[in-house]
Length: 558
Image (cartoon, rainbow, N blue to C red; front, top):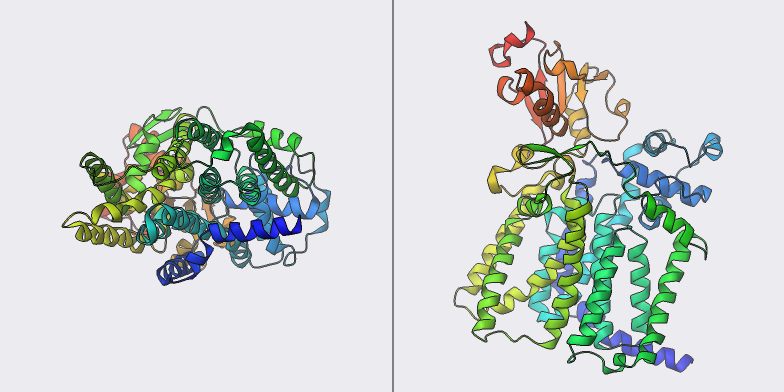
């Protein structure tokens, strides 16, 4: 048995791309290094975003008090990884141990946890954010490895370049949220399934099971991605005969390996949930998904508000938020790929067929599910689906090399994509590519919420406001404002029609909603009638009504 495992590990190690990654791949490590430096550099200017505080507090409660009742609408893995470095840093007050976590408000305790634990809040938050970077690196490596196997080294470098410098990946990989973790483990699991179908083994099944277990422990919607992978795998066994390990056509052999996959995934679940009987807790969390969504909430898209959302919201979000380099790469890939197949310049190999089944069917299923059921509040929901496009685009360098101006086109794509990452710094959350005029602060004309303003620029606002200055603020986020301002109050809705003689700092998300739904119907349009004194980042408008001038529409004070 020992010899079998040792030999199996040697074969598995040889079959993986670890040696190929380590040897002669300086570009890979340069790209990954820049990716890590970029994300770490933006942490010091990124205030707590809306979902981070309940996620972090829930992870700490899970580890410290062995209670998973707080924030049950998400599985524990991401949350406990974020909270783990804080176990030695934070000494919990005695009253925390006496709390009833099943009735505790996750948002209120999230603020209490971060701002009243005896440590400096931003440092504590950034320590918890660091483990999240691992998921971003795993996503980059998974894209590289899969693309390497399909398209060679040039395709792999191109794929990891697109992934590492994607503004949306850069924005969300450093946050304590579940979107990039699901993307990284989703792409990794799909890649391991791809390899398992091509060459099955005990260790291939084991690694696939561990990856799937981690994926399902990150976000409940991962079940949809898993379903897409299973259907794609069955279709591959029945319709892609070449390139498939023929031993998998034997039911008994396949069942043995599937048992290993299931056992490995189950053990991961048991470790994450802290019990062998994890199904009750998992099922309870699954039922709670969406429990806090307001059915009367008005979703926003292209200047319009609507209950229930918009059919084209997520396709539109992809068009407005993706880098121009990625969109250009996809256009070239679609047009030239079809043309090359028609002219027989490109071979449609069994390996490529298998990839298209797994790498397109599974994420497409997830994308359709998100379009149908997810709330229209952020591009981030489709990151687990769109991340597969980085692998697909790895085939573009191979296609372009057969055309005279191919390298020139490739350079244009690289420049456009790199420019997007540079433009997005230091606030990639608010990045827009400029299509339909949506760029910078004007991004609010297309999308709101986590697409542009998730509370991330609160620290820049605090630096811009003089110490002791009275401030009226319209805020969208979950941070504790007392930690940033000494004299402040929340703006009241009637002030949208008749502003007070004070200094206002208005979240672009909140301002756009109140202005569209309340002020404009009553004859006051803040974007038309009032000129902001300053704009902080792409998310805060500063209005100074203390000494009204002609530019401030003095009739508003009558």
